Length: 240
Image 1 (cartoon, rainbow, N blue to C red):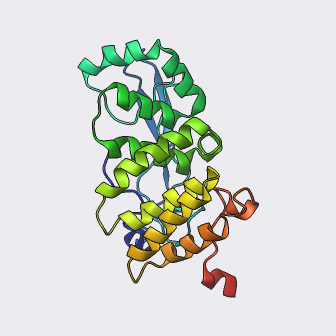
Image 2 (cartoon, rainbow, N blue to C red):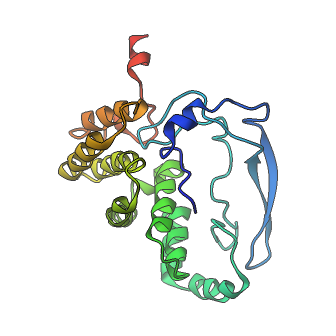
C-alpha cells in the first residue's frame, strides 16, 4: 500500500480537474482466493476531488464516494486489500479458523485486514497504519466506536508518524489528534495539533481550518459538529 491517500497531497487533490469519466460507476467482479466465490462490487473509471471538502475524520469528499472500498468475500469475510500469493493461502486458511479472525470480522473489515496483514508478517508499520486509517474514513460507524480499533490505530500511529516526511507528517498528526479526541484523550490530541500547526506549510488551506475545527471539538467530541462524517465548513463557507 502506497502513501497516496488524499491528505498527503491535499492541494493536488483539491486542484484535480474532473475528467470526462470522473464519478462514473463500473461493475467489477472479484473471485475469492479461498473458496472460489465470485461476487460483484462497484468501481469507477476515475475519481477526482473538485469541491475542496473534507469530513471531520479528514476524509476528502470525492466524485466517486459510491465505490466499494475494500471488497470483502461475502461468505468467509476475507478482505481483499491486495492480491495474495499462492504460498500465503494456507496461512490465511489457518487464520480463518481462529477466534482472532472472528473477532476482526465482527469489528470491521479494515480491522480484519490489519490483523491479517500482521498474520502474514507484513513488516512495514505503515501498511497497518493506512489500513486502519482507511477504516476511519470508509467505515466510521464500526471503527470510531470500538476501543480495540482505536487503540490499534493510536499505537501504530505513534510508530509511523516519526517515519513520515516533513511534508506529509502534519496532515497525519492532525488526523491522529482527531482520533485522540474521539478516544477521550484531549491532552494527547493537543500535543498532535501543536505539532501539526508548527510544521504545516504556509499554503496549508484546508489543513489549517481542520486543525481549528478539531481544537474546537476537544471539550465536546460527541457533538454533531464533531462527528466523523460531519463536513468541515471553511471560513469561505461561513462567510456565505
